[in-house]
Length: 250
Image (cartoon, rainbow, N blue to C red):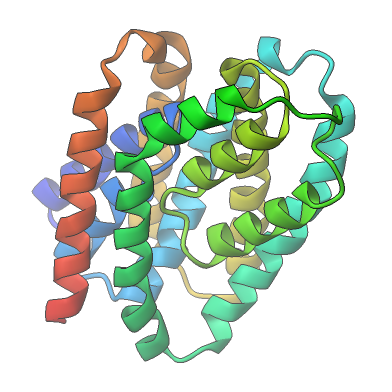
């Protein structure tokens, strides 16, 4: 990796840390850059998961005030996120690489669709009123499924979680976003530890993404509410489509 590639990965990490705190699709920033730098797809996914973990934690800490009174939810859904992350990581390491390169373009396209329709999803979620304070008995299984997805490929994990939590909990969207940040952090940290123990990350890329994502996570939590979401979504979708095309061409 030369100097310009390293700077590109660092910048992508900062962008990913910011958008993960706000929405949750930062992998669509970093994954295409790693592919463009010549990192193999599975190695890129592993290194990316490790690198984005510090930024996810920074974003969750930045939203700590909105977590007041949500301890029961954190414990209940955090366990399911952890189990889902380990399941997804196990699938990534044990399935053939051709499965990953075949499935991920579809996952990226689905993630892009989720980002495009996120305003409608949020509007629909705000129109719902949950009958139970913790979302009912099926929500933990949905959180587990989001953890499996996040452990296998992290793009738009946050959008999936916001859709699930927002439609099931009678809460303000900022409190839902704070809960989402913690659950995404649990998934990222769990699968990152799993990969460190059982896989072979490309450490230079992971370190650069980690440094950038911490900066981005802090900025996202501090200034994120001032950004225009439409332009941000458009940029993420454009980058995501670029990644899908790169994988198809490979």
